Every structure is written in structure tokens, then in C-alpha cells.
Image (cartoon, rainbow, N blue to C red; front, side):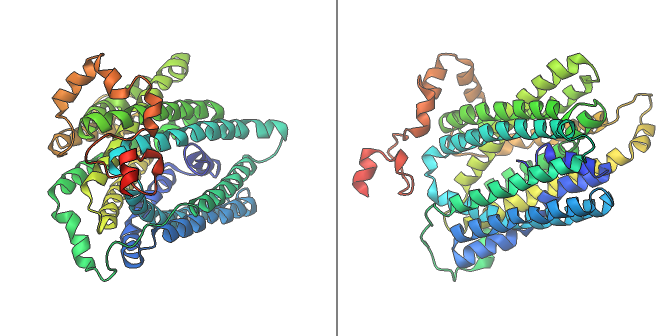
Length: 457
């Protein structure tokens, strides 16, 4: 989190980055996902998911060491040189992280039982949300107070210290991953790779999901990198204030992962995806109401961040859950590769398009037949307009498990049903198995194994 979120675009602005460069920086991780086809090949060829995950994640995090050194060496005297070096190093780190990510997805698909994936990933992401809240609050506050503690010190020194902490934390994380069990090889490594990589494109359910998600990723990232830039430049907010808004998003995400995780296990993933897609489509339009005033800072932006965090938690969780349900055990990394590559490419294009638009606001405003100063708000409006397209595609997504959308909404509207959906002691449901006859518990997660399952192993 210290090398992303609010901190990376803020660091780029400290190096005098232009809107196009901010867009490039935001697009790099998405374009790096195109390398996941190679990552998928490595997974299927060597079947060493644990080794690939831990090895590539460790090297990826180490790439931030030269970022710190380059900033210290050239950040003040030649910020553009340091900025272009940052772009190259972030690209390298993102490519290595994409290799790690595809191996991790394939690894987790085998480790986590299907019947508790919603609760498991809801719990996991909620815990990550707690860490994000703590780190964002501490990091943003540190950026504001360090210049007061040491008058005359460059703002870049604060970023360098934060990134150094991130490297240490990343190394510890990679070490902890080595403590997890490896999956056994379930099929021959001589499997025909052409057949594996053709399978996702022949799966109609997967095609519907990926078409919807690709357009969604493009539309979202036209504006996504520039909300922080808008708050820093147009609203003149401090790092601490923006950090608080980010924390609100993380808290809403934490609660959302918990709630959507339970609901998706009960009503299915598609109803959740449809609902949150409708809400988040029009959320950027609400930012047109913001301005440099107290109403914006103390009411509007907090509401928007809470709503967005909660709704996007449902989208991120349930699209991945639905993907997990679609993929076969054999050759699943090819599905994950197509998912990451195509979504990443579209998201990267969206960020670049947003950056080019931000650089040419005057030209865009000349096309509008009336006089109004939109600025970055124009990106928010365009993003919302493009997000309307996936609304016509989301209903075509198919899921064999779960309720129809209309029925799910009627169930959610019934207050009495929430007791059975969430449980009277809902937090305990993270640790309780699904008492289903089709329960296929994983031997690697005995926490969820019921007595009947234990007797079978």
C-alpha cells in the first residue's frame, strides 16, 4: 500500500509529473499484466506455484530499492530523470508482480475450498483493509509532519523513507508465503499448451464475463488515477486529508468484503455484480457537485468514498469468485492469464486516454457549446458515460449457482431474511463450514473441515 494508493501519484507530482505522466504511471501496472501469458506458461510448465509466487514477489518488491536510491540521487537536481527512472522501475516491478500474481491465483484456487471462498476472501480482504487503514493514516500523516520536524528538508525524503519501509514489509510478506503448503501436481506437464490457452476463448460464460469486465476496466480508469490529482491540485487538500478519505474507502471496503462475502455465498455472485455495477456507474457524476468548500470536504467526498469503497468491494470480490467457479482445475492459469491481461490492457488504455484528455482540457472544452470550467470533472463525466455500456452486458453473464437478480433483490429487501443470510453471529461464519452434501473441503485448510470431512481424510 505504501508504494501505491495515494502515495505513488503524490510522489510523481512531487517530481513535477504532468497529467500524461501520471496517466502513464497509473497505466503501467495494467499493461504489465500482458506478461501473464508467460507467467501462465511457467505455472503450467513447472507446476511450482509456491516457488513462482514467492520468488517473483520478492524480486518485485526489491525493485523499489533503486527507486529510493534514484530519488535520493537525482530527485532534487533532475526530477524528470528520476521520474522516467521511476516509470521504468515501476514497469519492471509490475511485470514481476504479474508473474507472482498469476501463480498465486492458481495456487489459491487449489488451496481454498470452493464452498467457503466468499467468506475466506472476504475475511482476507477485510484484514488487508485494516492494514491499509493503518498504513494510509500513518503514511499520509508522516508526509505532512516531516517538513515541520525538519524545516527545509525536501518532500522527496519523506517518500523515500516510506518506500524503504514498504520494501522491508514486502520482504517479510514474501518470507511468510514460504510457510504455506505447495499443491501436488495433478496432471502431466506434457499437457498440450495450445489446448490450454484456447479453452478460455471457447468458454461462452467466460467470454461474456471478460467482455463485460474489459469495457468496465477501460471506463473506470479514464478517471480513476485523477481523483487524487483533483484533490491535490484543484481542491488543495493536504496529504493527511486525502489519507483520511482513503481510509474511509478502506473501511467501507473492509465492511463490504465481509457483507458481500456472506451474501455471495447465499444468493450468488451475479446478483451482487449487477447491483454494484448499477451504483458505481453513476457514482463519478456525483463528483460534479464538489468544489473548494467545506461541504465538499466534510460531507460529499466522505460519502462518495464510503459508497465507492463498499460497492467496489462487492464488484472485486464477486467477479473473482465467479471466475473461480468458471475455471477448471486443469489449466486454470490460462483463464487467470486471459482475465488479467485483457482487463489490464483495457485499464491501461483507459488511464492513458484519461491522461491525454487531462493534458488537452482546452481542446475538449472548445467542443462543448456552452462555457463551463469542468477541469478534471470532465474526466469523471466521460468515465460515467462510458460505464453505461457495461450495464447492457452485465445481465448476459451466466452463473449456474445462485438466485436470479430480481429474486435476490426481493430477498435483500426483506429485513427478516438478513438473519439467515448473515447469521446472528455473522463474524463466526468466517470460520464455519458450509454444511453442504457437496462439500469438498481442502486438506490445506482444516479450520473449515467438518467432522464428516475429517473422517474421509
